[in-house]
Image (cartoon, rainbow, N blue to C red; front, top):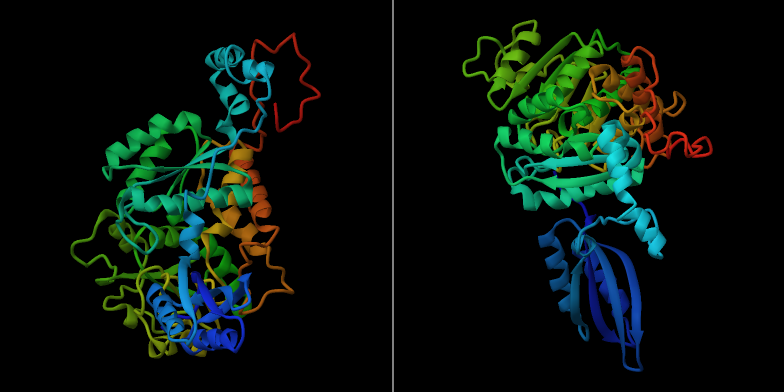
Length: 491
């Protein structure tokens, strides 16, 4: 599919131009004739003979940006100064920082925040380790853990190259849920080592967000950590994606007037995201699903199945289909792709059932061109921000963890994820729902708090409907300090 100018590929070009004449119009013409888009034009200095202009341009790619700069060089009387990539500028020095919640203004502050006063707090936690949730950052902290083996659509690029993504994830946790998240990029891809490291650092956190760890290792790592730790472990690539897909599908089915239990779903992709989506859809009532990967339809007679593929083969494909994805999609009500670009075309989609739903989520290039999909499908969603119905994990993970942390949950289960999906779906009111609006914007003000409330309620229900008892006050406080006036969030 053709790419279009995007702010993610925007540049700012500093130009010196004659003070008189039509240089400014020549600049905008040169950019637009090259397929770019001028998003800002600022005069940063002026003299009798010349102007200094910073022109900001959205390009379709790095190469396209370079072409636009070369076109600007051809304008008479214009000289090129500095060219800045705005995305790289935003990442200079990293995107997050640690800051103190309390001022350190004098010796009194120092003696309470650090030594000698802090020793009393340390001893209180030593006597009652549960007080760590009350007296440290633990209760509001999440570790964002990766080994860099499956970063975005970039593949196995390693822990250092994964760090900008993990920083971004931490920034989103703070922006949308007020959670302090810490990127931890591990220089190992050995499952045993990853499990051991995360177990060792877990005391400082109230939750673990696994990120961009390749399948099938991610299944084992998550399962082992959930078994070993008393805090929730959530692999966002699996479950965050699954929750958003289920929420979007719930609303898409309302648009086309179909029931979850009656539809036939065909999926492309049997990795971490695909497997998690499948399991959550089945938990939500999908009874007829077929999954295909690069080798075709997954079925019990296929040789060389891994453990995860063997599970898929046993629990899907009731009709015993074999063959290719293109063959499997014929007659399907729903196509969900979490695989690779351009595996289907318009002719394939034309064979689907009437009022078909297409979620082509490979990013940046989907399984089928969305513009083509919209010619035959009733509802189309992608992972991209430049088409309606963006399936974006940012809609889920901040609210999910906010709910888990508020409930002081020690785990996360399917009921909590189903609750999150239902809550996310309800943020689109019935009178707002249509084929181009089945899922809210990530900036919708109610998303995180609605999802958090639903997850918190489900977590409480998982404990038998009992609110988590507050941590026992430390011995150092009992009898010496009235805590009734403290805000609930503090003590």
